[in-house]
Amino acid sequence: MTDTDSSFTEDRRATEPAGGEAINRPKAKSLKPLALLMPYVARHWVTVSIALVFLVAAAAVSLAIPLLLGSAADAGQAAQGSAEELLALVDRAFLWVALAAILSGVLGAIRFYFVSRFGERIAADLRKDLYAHLLKLSPRYHSQMRSGEAVSRLTADITLIETFLGSSASLAARTLLTTTGALTMMLVVNWKLGLTLLAMLPVAVLPVMAIGRVIRKMSNRAQSRLADAGAEAAEALDAIELVQAYNREQSRLGAFTEAVEATFDAAMRRIGARSLMIVLVSVLLFGGFVGVLWMGARAVATGSMSFGDLASMVLYALYAGSGFGMLAEVYGEVMRAAGAADRAAEVLNAEPEITAPENPVALPGKVTGALAFEDVTFRYGDEAVSALDHFSLSVKPGEFVALVGPSGAGKT
Image (cartoon, rainbow, N blue to C red; front, side, top):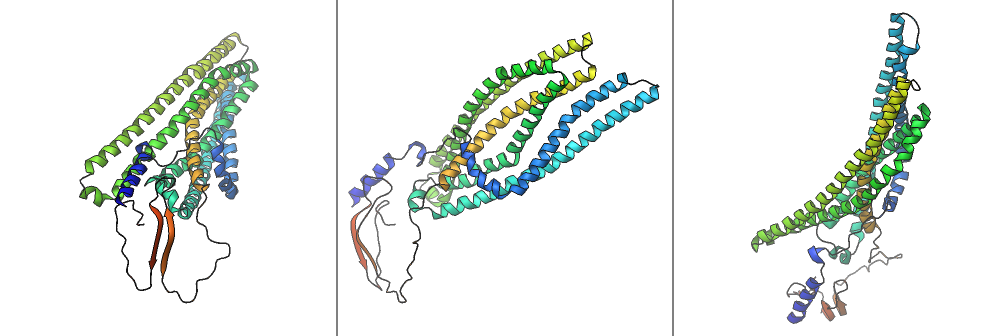
């Protein structure tokens, strides 16, 4: 039995993936994994609806501010009368701008509260459901998952989803609204300049989206390396007595250091790609906006456009430019959340191997306590070597039986 156990241990060790990973880590290739969150969103539709109302209201008020500023800039030139009347007109115009700014801040604060509450609530519900499902899964499933891997999915992965729902999703929706609204208002203020800007957008946006796909893969890889580091630490700390008893501190530290450095390398590659995205956004988008505004300044100089309209165009251009830059940043966060949702869905979709019978039979009133194994064969997962091979054992009531043997002999 010792020879069999030795070969079993070696075979099991040889088939373990590099780095100790026993399961394949899913990689989100699209936003489809986020569909996992739809039942939770529907469950809290009232909070979502309130947040959306204040989101739209705050965006509408923000978009009105450039128009009000443009009107205020032209107020003194358009009006006729004494200096006092002109000043009163300008004061009234800028008072409306100040009120719009205050209202935008209040609406934004209310939106932030409800969106943050929504993200926290769904994260709590998802954590409970994920933990409840983990408790139902068979020992075989847990034996294929490294120590700390399940905890990483309950904590780090759900935290990414919480950040997405409570911050990134709201930021993306608000930015999309204000950016679309700003482009529309630019067409209203001056359709020639607005069309010129719209024609330039594909040239600027397509490269940014291409780099965003690369960032998505790098973000998922960085998540996996971080989970490796957490699993390594949890495995060593859970058995700290054995680690210290066998003087394995340096060995475990070396393994953890290797996992941490792999996490750092993956994160730096992701940061490098995001830095390149920021450069593209600055050069392509803002360079285009500067060109359009240069054309607007020439129109003011020739008298075909008022100074107030140019001021409005400048602000709307800033709205649109910063909006596209923000969407590029948020895109990476959304992809990280999609990867986290994919990992959570993998657990939730796993079917328990052992389930309660539909019609359970009650135990007899008197239990004798006898125990018997009859011709039992057992192996870990899909291993070729069995830990137990046609094993039989009978334990009578009142008997004491001890099972001894090396690790991997099938004592458990």
